[in-house]
Amino acid sequence: MKNLNLSPLKKLEIILEGAHQEFASDLLDRAGVSGYTIVNNLSGKGRHGFHEGHLMFNEEAVLIMIIVAVPEELVDPILLGFAPFFEKHTGVVFISDIKVSRLVKFRSRDT
Image (cartoon, rainbow, N blue to C red; front, side):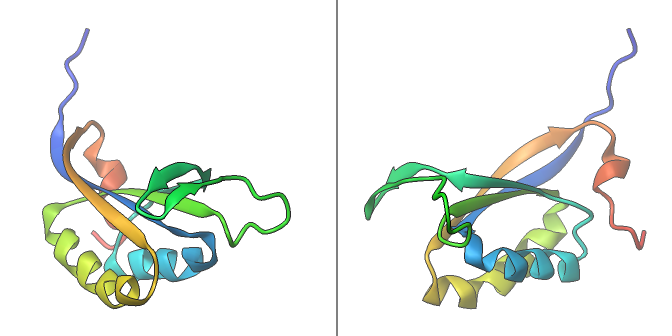
């Protein structure tokens, strides 16, 4: 079997209220991110207690997670874009080192 070529990237897991999904996706698009995954209706426990996912009639009140894999040079610009947002709104960003196959899938459309 042929070995996969793995390339290092950074994974950002951005958790915020669904009402702000458009803001977050616009920021990522402007930063040059080639794609991302959005997970809806998160449940979990944090500093403010338990947060229930899947509210039946209000998709904007639920928490979402946007998962994105980017080159290291995009991390700081993305974080700078989110900094003023997180001063006023709830949420968090987790950053981890990852390796991906098929690096071409994570390159900007402009390169």
